[in-house]
Length: 363
Ligand SMILES: NC(=O)c1ccc[n+]([C@@H]2O[C@H](COP(=O)([O-])OP(=O)(O)OC[C@H]3O[C@@H](n4cnc5c(N)ncnc54)[C@H](O)[C@@H]3O)[C@@H](O)[C@H]2O)c1
Ligand SMILES: O=C(O)C(=O)C[C@@H](O)[C@H](O)[C@H](O)COP(=O)(O)O
Ligand SMILES: [Zn+2]
Image (tube, rainbow, N blue to C red; front, side, top):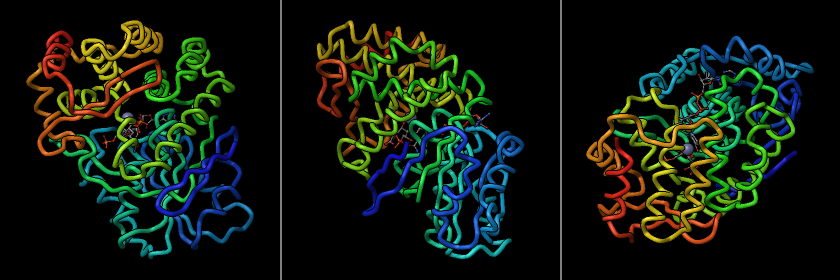
């Protein structure tokens, strides 16, 4: 399947299918110059780097391919590790016509995109996601960046790739915990705008966890359709794009307070989504059955539904206060409101509901 997403006054394709990594022509047609820098990590390199390089070189393409292999983990999604990408680019004299290719999960994708945005003020960029998280969310839409000790994804840029190539077969090597983490963002699309997807997930979660290729491909396609519709409508998060942050204000606080990498992003989003649903019930904005179905679905995906043990409301506040959706000092949250599949981005809520959610969720 080929989807198109419109952003930054152009559109780019998202290729989704099996065996695509070996179809060199798909990647080559989106490389404008002669040089490519593949950015990957120590786990993915032994699995897929040779195949990716071979695809770029196939058919006597004449491309020159360099690579840089970063350490693996959310704790390395930092400015000092990103420096290694720019070091490699300068040592090998990469010019402005170069394409940076992200081969990996969301960490590699976010870092490579930011490296591409800043290198010589902008070089070409391609996403080859290899996790569920990256296939259904991070590779699409152009949010790039790194973490800061005081807040998640605080340093970055909106920078769109030239194409996204999703080879579903690469998920066969993904650990179960990482698979589940990505599923939390698929559930997110169901909750914020796609009730049919939510119901499909209720019926098909076992197939996803068993890595049934047909079910996985369907979930990735529906997620990419949802994400590209939202991003095409609001690339720079002036409005509706913020809905993609359901559960993230709470979740990012969990990730930052635990130390990056202790809780996976999708795990924190899962527990944060349960908190957002709980608060929505307290405000009387949704039927309680939506919150209980949400919790049940996340549990079925083997995701956590409570914040890390010992985390306090005060710790939540420390990180929520610097959330990127804070406007003029006021916190805004994505809350569910109305029937399944409806949500709002708002700072207009009774603060007692937030206090109650924080107090009852922390244990
Ligand atoms: N830019 C966005 O819009 C956006 C959206 C969602 C998440 N994110 C970011 O993405 C990051 C999380 O991404 P993630 O969940 O992909 O984590 P990740 O990039 O850390 O990858 C998860 C783990 O799986 C390994 N891995 C990757 N592909 C593999 C494969 N095919 N086989 C075996 N192992 C493989 C990685 O080496 C890593 O150890 C977070 O930093 C989050 O903030 C960004
Ligand atoms: O694409 C978006 O917009 C999102 O919010 C997707 C989120 O799943 C993702 O985690 C994103 O990186 C969060 O962005 P942030 O601006 O809250 O750091
Ligand atoms: Zn996310």
